[in-house]
Length: 485
Image (cartoon, rainbow, N blue to C red):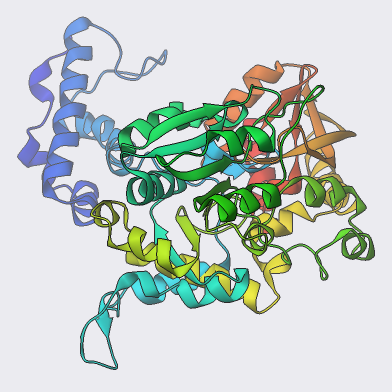
């Protein structure tokens, strides 16, 4: 039986050069914790009679130096695990562009540059340079938002759920809000429109049926108790068949006639002009993107809603807009002034990094560069031919390993993020099989890489959609697949 007394003490281990170097990098407390864990593990193995490394033919440590040599290799992996954040970058090979589970919209370089510029120093977050005194943070993105959308005023909060809650609390507390039964939606995480209304103290007035609501239903529901008419964009499901829904213009006309506000929760944040110039079907065809026509026809734009006369519109910043997580409230000055002054505004307000990233994103739209520089739009407009060319390059790099069978097949990419229900984009997929491994085992192995690769399985094959893989990630993707092999 090995003698556990040969295991050196923590202090003896700390003065060893390899351990001292780790202490410089990770700090005294963390290294001591790791040393205690590794020495305890070695003592337990020695007392149980198990070999220290489990390999046949390897002798037990005969001295404290040999015991230290067994302990040291386990220290850095343990320290890395202790310090590694659970929030990690991944390679998204699923083809889902606005992937809710993978952080939604990746930011443009312009947005990241602005975050670094503002975040690393003091800033004018709430300071008025002209007056030399306290300023207001909600004015930073407003000029760009109003210029791009035609809104009179803008307010930014931390997400679109907060925007909806704030609008209802500021404009409809203790009064009725008219909503079609077909729009009482639930989005990810159990967020339900009726429950938001209850928390905001607005009173829900349901009208119509799940599949059919007419303009006359809205008209008949308006009373002296009515604060506003709310339209909620059905962003993550569709209703087909025997359906009816009044146009936005009809709702605006009712609101004007009866003296009630009309509010629209658009959710996705689609800005006209980001995909093609002009932003219409003709423009998409001229740009070689005719397969995006259903997107343009089916996904409403912020500008169109405001032009129709809607009083207040709210959208997300991190979906089709392609910016940071934010709730953007746009509309007429009078209702937005009430929203800005509501006590919940402080609870829901955005921070300086959100404003910086949002401003950086909006500048790309204003300069006409968004299609090429905002990743969501760039991925959205990638052609199947360009994706296939990249997939073939990856396949060629893998086939030399002799492990993978590669095939390029037709597929569909999803826009994701609770947007454009039922609409997918044509793509070309790289389908991989291994004779010695199942698709599920290969998918799990890719998730254990650094960086992890997130893929999907179709017809018992692992498939990679390079629509959502950045060009500078391709080398890491190939290296990861070779490592797994």
